[in-house]
Amino acid sequence: MPAPFIHASTPGRVVFGPGTLATVGDEIARLGCRRALVLSTDFQAPEAERLADMLGDMAAGTFTEAAMHTPVSVTETAMAQFEDTGADCVVAIGGGSTIGLGKAIAWRNDAPQLVVATTYAGSEVTDILGQTENGRKTTVRDPRIRPETVIYDPDLTLGLPVAMSVSSGLNAMAHAVEALYAPDANPVTSLMAVEGLRALKSALPKIVDAPDDPAARGEALYGSWLCGIVLGAVAMSLHHKLCHTLGGGFDMPHAETHAILIPHTAAYNAAAAGDRLAPAAALFGGDLGGGLYDFARSIGGPLSLSDLGLRQGDLTRAADMAVENPYENPREVTRDGILALLSRAHSGQRPATT
Image (cartoon, rainbow, N blue to C red; front, side):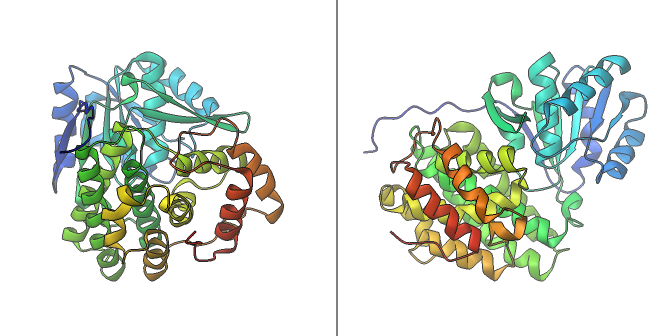
């Protein structure tokens, strides 16, 4: 019999399948809305403009300045445009940066949100908002933050660059690993976490070999959805604390930082949470940290924080920041332990197994 647990199903509507981009207008109407502000990064501005053209009068305009780590200053600018255009909802098309902006707007004005996910971020199905101000990234959880509707159209990911696909997929896998040892984990979230890991482990090598394989793209989106669900259902621990520290304090790229750190954080917690991590470890040859590192290397994933521009001299300050108000974690979070972890991740070494 499983240990006593509490499981609360998260609300939300998912529309999954090729060609589902065409349903955006119907889904806006289903939310009781009439004018959507379409959000994107500058890189994905053409996709935002095409979607706005497709929506016609249902588009209140586009805002294409979404930025990594959701700077508060950008959110304030987007809020002003939302009000000026008479929008009554937002449609975020893209990955974590754009999704974060949509969440930041909704948290402030309770606007309904629809997400068209084009990466494997997973944040589109969570009630978590991470935002940056004055060099610090903080997180907020609130039901208003979770998007009401998410559209997963594998056709939109066929052109996602391989490197971005790999780092985004590894980022999603990090959510699932942490969910397995979360203090409020339960049998349902653990099943979803392991299935999400399995799907992404299967899909990412296929995408590397054949980026335009629609079946592999669909499998990766399926896996990232599951990883996102568990991210939003349970508390996160050391791994996400480190990523928030490096992202907000050192402006490190979000997905790549997650991808590099997850083998090391998994190894750090392996002894303290071995029973809970065992199903995931079995997918990677029994050594979860080493197996994740070897998997990332085999598909050309990022391995070294130094390659992302983090300096050796930054590690001490990062470790000091990470142990301030640490998240609950299976293994005690110590400054020396975190500094050793970050040092290995900085140099791109295979994670320690102790």
